[in-house]
Image (cartoon, rainbow, N blue to C red; front, side, top):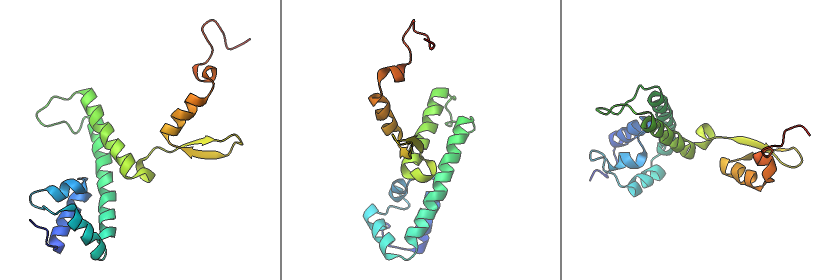
Length: 151
């Protein structure tokens, strides 16, 4: 097990994280093989490691976002497997959802709504969905069949 700290080992970890590979996956690679608890201790004990990890993650998130665009544009097929629109969409969507969860300030959806006084408030898509359910049904569904918009 390569759980003994070396600057070279940490550099390998940061390179892979910077390439868009999740830290948990990097730590389990056979050539890395560092327990998460050990790396967590290194983050506390080694000056600058936490900042370097954050910078690597930010770059890695940009790589993942670029990969999602490549998938949608048909530039990143699964090797040996014919392209399929629904699979490609799912591959891109999961990357975007992970980005929104891991770095919501940069990749999350920010929606603003107004309260009763007209003041803008931020709300997540879930909050907006709940708010829509609380509105009167006619406002959500629109006019019934046979009823026009004009009286």
